[in-house]
Length: 111
Image 1 (cartoon, rainbow, N blue to C red):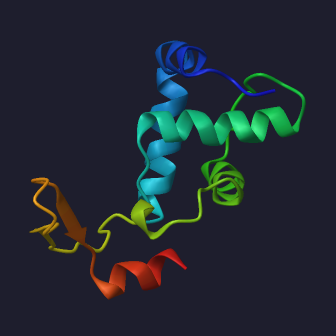
Image 2: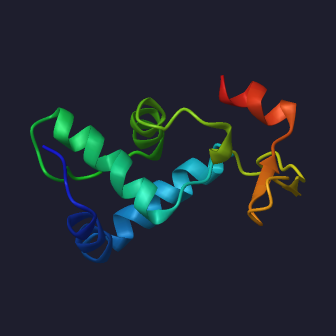
């Protein structure tokens, strides 16, 4: 069952201690998530067990193992994600629009 953004924000308010613990467990493993990403991950796990919000396990290692299975697959969750510099280039069609030129390294990461 998909939850709305409003429902996720409500869970964020109701389960703040759980969210902080999820974020801490991931940070220890050199990954960072926003509070809403943490809510989404735990909801994904809970919904896989036909529940709205399951209680977190007492053991942090067990929690981390669960979280790692529900992490979005992206390098942007690393504690020190790569960064790129880019520039806007005039589209050249007289519209005043610009084109964002993305580095090749970024495209390689998206594949």
